[in-house]
Structure formats: structure tokens, C-alpha cells
Length: 441
Image (cartoon, rainbow, N blue to C red):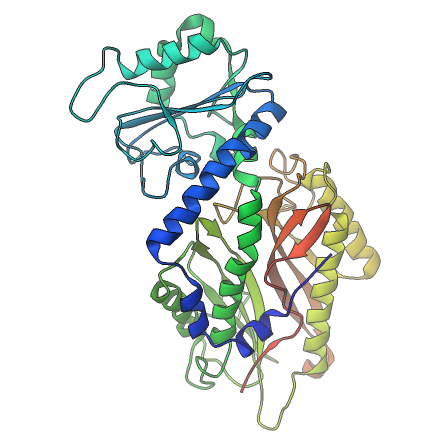
């Protein structure tokens, strides 16, 4: 298990203006993302298709009703399907991998896909789009054809009813009988990261940590004036100002000695005061990848130089909870097996809390094995049954409850969330993890 400098230091040692210098212009962002796509199409996808026993995969979607997996397969300059976009992938056990497009020429697919249809923007082809698809499939004579219909993961269930019926008709009875759910294939494609992505994802998370570091500082928080909601909106505004986007509305919450202000997320309009324990939940998108981070801060009272020892101990307990989960992450184990193991270890260690860790990647709540849900601590049917694979990203999301002596034994909830990479059989905390409370004067 490895880590880098704490999230607190990410802000204190680097001016926030540095993050704007780190973020690439849009043109360069597109070049990076398209390079990753080409790399993934030649390495990740063939491996996952063969692992799941699907030798041909068909992805079909119409403009503005996109299959969720389609967007991860399009070049950066394509922001939607065009009319009807059909992508076909062939990964025979023996023979070269093919990534093919059955779509109008000149819409942005040519650099990544082999064009199979002679339709241009102005000239009709001698065969219809569906006829072209049938020809392409017949020529390859696949044994198992993956289509995106699925029970558990929306990522693998993007084939609309009309397109499904049209696809089956176009294939004909013999080929249609070979179709199978591509649920595990869609999940595998989305969850596995390429070497290039793994190289870059730590830096993406440093940007998220830097924004949190500034938000949880005296530059943003004015005790007695600033509300929790003010800080949450500042985080979203800062993200947009950097040319990035949030994938959910940030939240900032307050826990206060002797005062019940509700559970985490329930006190947005409360004014922040000295002595408060603050919590945030924040996620952004950059270069097509999502972050998801929860950290905690303490607002110093007059005369205080450090937070109460009980709050420091709460964060140490949260770090120990993260370490227990890291120890349970073993390739091949299901999310439900990992959940049962870590909850048992928490009980042995006397840690009270919950575990609801999820995969992350192109989507914030990403594809892969679920390790509990907030309201499902005995296992998650279906989504928790998937095994843990190498070269994947996970959002270590959890909370522990700890009594704080300085607050008269009042229990606080220390909720944390930290993106990790599972690669080489180890957990790596990306961009560091919070081991000290942010301090606000």
C-alpha cells in the first residue's frame, strides 16, 4: 500500500493558481483522450471480450438517446451519436481484433474505426445501414454476439426497445439466436484502466484535493458569516472557472458540539462557527475521468492552535478503516466477499461504521463490483457479486462513528472518500489521502 503527501499539503504547498496552469487547453485534452481511446481499443477491449467469451460486440444508438457505454467509445470531438451510430467489435480467439463503424462517413470516427459502410453525407450507399451490419456479421460468423441488454448494470442495458427489435430483424433468426447479454463485457470495458490513464489519474485527483484544500481554508470560509451552502457553491463555481465540471452538486456539512444540526448533508444553510467539524463531498470530471472525494476540516476557536484530540483520533480511526478495506482487496474476490471480510475486521478492531465503496472511472458511480451500499450492509445482489480485477479504480467510501471526550462524549461521524487504484495486487491512494484535518482560522 502506497501513499503520497496528504491532501492538506496539496493546498498548503501549492498555490491554487497552479491548478489552472496544469489543466490542458480543450484541443490538447481531446488529443489525450483520443490517444487513450485508441490504446484501449487495441489492448483493453480485446482482452475483456475474450475473457467474457464474446467474439463479436454490437453497440447501437441513435442521436440523443445514447447507450451509456457508447459515449466511452466515441472520440472526444463526437459529443453524441449521429443519426444512428453502429459500432462493431470482433475479437476472434485466433486472428486480429477489429473495431468497425457502420455510420455516415466524416462524422469523426475515422481515426479510431474502420469504416464499413459506403454512405457519405450526401450520397446513399447501395445497402442500408442494417443490411451492412448483417453482411459484416455474416462475414465473421461469430459464435456469441454481445448486445447491450442487462439486469443489474445500466451500463450494459443501453439498447433501446426499438433498436433491439430492429437489430434482431436485421440479423435474422440464425444470427439473432447467437446473441447474449454483454453486461459483463460492458462493465469490464468501462472499469479497466489503460496504462496511460493510470499514469494520469493521480494528477487528476490532486486537482480535486487542491480545490477542497482551498475551500476548507480562511480564503473561503469566514466563520460567523459563511454558510455551508456558500462553500459548496464556491467549490462548484471554482470547478467551472477552471474549465471543468462537477458530476454532482457538492455538499458541505457541519457537526457541532452540543447541537444537533442533522446528519451529514442536512445543514446547508447553517452558518459556520468556530469549533465546527466540517465535511465535504465533491467530485469533478477531467479528461473523461471522474473523482469522488470526502474530506473533513476543523474551525479553530479563539486561542486554539490545534483541533481537539478526540477529533484527531476520529480521523485516525477513519484511516484505520481505510487500511482494513485495503487489506481485504484481493483480485478475484467478489465485492460481497470483500464487504463481509472488512466488516468482520472492523468489528474485531472495535470500529463502528459502514462501508459503501464503489468503482469509479468514466462515471462517478462506475462499473465494477460494489462493496456494500449505505443501506445494504449484508451484501448487494448482482452488483456485489462481480469479482475484483486488476488495473481498476475504486472510491473508498465509508464512515466511522467515534465518541469525542472534549465534546462530552458526543459521537461524531467521520465520513471519508478517497480514490484508489488497484494494480499489481496493491492499493494506491491517488493524490494522497487525508491524514490530518484541514484547519480554518
